[in-house]
Image (cartoon, rainbow, N blue to C red):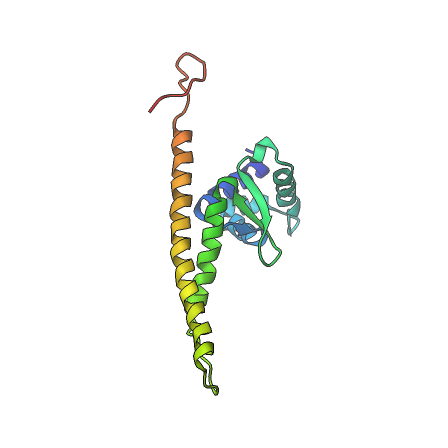
Length: 170
């Protein structure tokens, strides 16, 4: 198996685990966790950047070799690999990450006494975060349901006993 094929296989494996996607630099970290693959990714002491760059180009072009993966820009403007079928999972994962941070902060103002309307703003914000948490949970459930349906379709493989591809019925 070529190094590029091994890298692509690793990308699929990592993205199955990381529905929120991964940046290119995070992907390199995963690649170097595999000691055997890491040996193939270094030449003359330098990382073989071209392998991942070529993979990114293939993904952007939409070639059959990299079906199911796409690259999007995250909020920081970094390229992120995600599975095509996981747009909802990606959004729910990112929202959850930011919600955890936002809800862990207790909104308070020191050295200032809030009047009733100012306190109402803070209360609305806290209420909106709680509502967004609930909606995000529902979004994650929907994403999981869609992923499960897609997986079930893939499990309905073809009947190869007669050499023809026919969809099997559940």
